[in-house]
Image 1 (cartoon, helix red, strand yellow):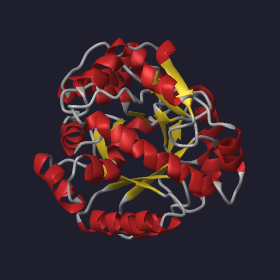
Image 2: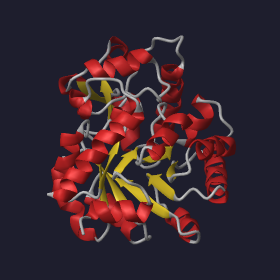
Image 3: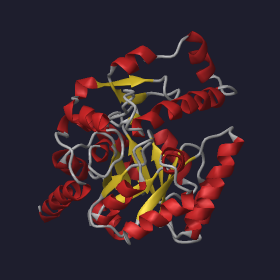
Image 4: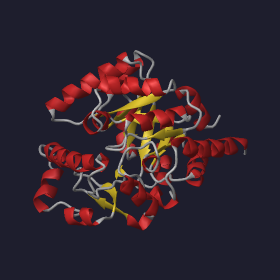
Length: 328
């Protein structure tokens, strides 16, 4: 059995496509639309509560009212911020109470989340950019790996999708390709490599249900791979963005002092938190239709995105491609 067929069966979806959690792009209506169309939408809690202003429980209930199909929640395990840690645990408890069937964890050690999730038969997949990081979470019992490659948007990886799959395939877990998939041809190539599914963000930003600014969506349609650049001034690590005057004004690399602090064990988490707080404020404006700030995260799959479409049409094309793949 191909890993994609097992993945869809285990998760309870039709098409092995995940709408990755995005800040600020993950509005509840988008998450619900992806799941309703046969994929798996994943909630980004800060986007849900801070950008779109939903009470977290009511936001989950809104999604459940819009679709009866499975969706997930992302938990980013950031150290050093007690207020965030308190919110994270509250979000987890609410997600358990609302019977969300899929968790996606990022950064840190997800062992405590895995234990609580598995007690309710919830699947937990963890983001990883390399084999080194994957080995740290395999032993705590995660159910699968989200392989973040060097073509991803937002906080990107540093290894090609082909090499990353090669590095992870023997660990005995399903591996999801995250990064660089913009159309059905990219999708089929990743399935042929042996990936169990693909996780897309940029493709779903350019949909009618996503509530970011229209000029952001149009920028994705017009951009090509050469327009995607890396900057570490958004999160303290490399992030993929569309090259714009605002990004160039911000600058692409931190100065000597910040670079030094980001390398030190005692200061790196504090500095990254500072960068991310500033970025939260900047990127919230992307969801404010009266603002024209041009901080646009996107991955290298932009080259194959040429129109803004309804989510249902996007997933219909991917499902047809998936059926063709299984038939070969």
